[in-house]
Length: 214
Ligand code: HEC
Ligand code: HEC
Ligand code: HEC
Ligand code: HEC
Image (tube, rainbow, N blue to C red; front, side, top):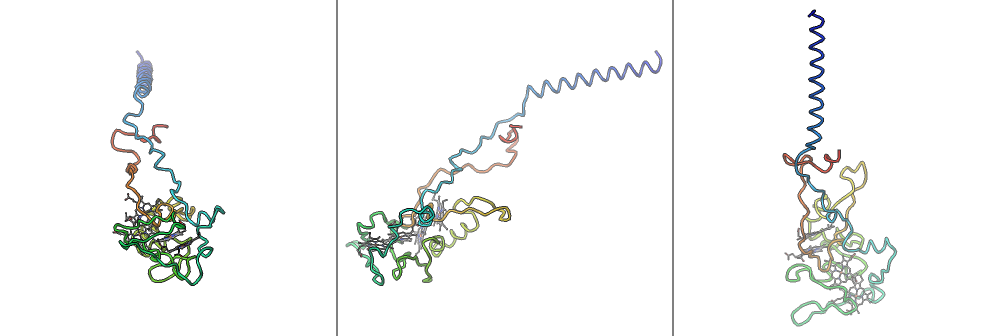
């Protein structure tokens, strides 16, 4: 055999080996698609952003019935409605306000109407330092007693902020306290918590739904 023939022989053999290996890899990778358990997508019920309550501001926006807020349709200006109590010193809510069912705080600690409503002007709310705030500014009212919750809400850690974290891309979208809490009875029953976030690639041996669709 000449030197040339030997070289051609080896090159030919190598080509066959590489083609064989290539075929082997294609077949075995198809037989074992990306391995590991899939991490399921979060149940959509945790992503539902429908507010559980509509506030005064929502009624105004939707142009709906505001007669509950027409305080001076029934009350006299300059005459704060007197608060009545029963023998156990529990507030008696008149039948005209039967939708107001008080239960704010354990032992009804914050049931007194004028802790929040302004007796001098029923059309406004009042915060602890005596400032008036509008019915469309409920977080300032709540925050005057619940400072840490207001701080968390403003930072986006309480009250399910959505929209954009990066404000140069768009606005953050916040629900008002009263979209979730009824101001008169704000306790929310404990609910099922959403699953914790997982790292993009998941623990070893798992794939995200995103990866596995590729
Ligand atoms: C449909 C008529 C009506 C409207 C509207 C109305 N009220 Fe009253 N309210 C009454 C009546 C009647 C009473 C009981 C008699 C009284 O104290 O004057 C009352 C009592 C009250 C009391 C005393 C509650 C208690 O437990 O003793 C407060 C506080 C009050 N109203 C606040 C308001 C505020 C704030 C608004 C507006 C957001 C408003 N009301 C709108 C009819 C009304
Ligand atoms: C005048 C002060 C004051 C204002 C204003 C106020 N709260 Fe409260 N809140 C309290 C007190 C006091 C408690 C009871 C704390 C306790 O029992 O340990 C309470 C309890 C709560 C609780 C816990 C559940 C419960 O009933 O114990 C929630 C939730 C709450 N408030 C939400 C709100 C929201 C929302 C607003 C605004 C609409 C608001 N609060 C306005 C004083 C206030
Ligand atoms: C913790 C603060 C707080 C207390 C205490 C409170 N309110 Fe209110 N109230 C509010 C806020 C805030 C709104 C506006 C609710 C909204 O936008 O959803 C409101 C709304 C109302 C309304 C109009 C809407 C409706 O449900 O009819 C009436 C009337 C009313 N309150 C009466 C009273 C009476 C009477 C008392 C005392 C027995 C009382 N409130 C105690 C904060 C309070
Ligand atoms: C998207 C709904 C939502 C909004 C908006 C919201 N909250 Fe809450 N809040 C909750 C839930 C849910 C809980 C926890 C209930 C539980 O499991 O105990 C809670 C708990 C609370 C408590 C009870 C004590 C605590 O710290 O856990 C307070 C007080 C409170 N919120 C105040 C506020 C105030 C003030 C605002 C507005 C500045 C606000 N919340 C806005 C849903 C909301």
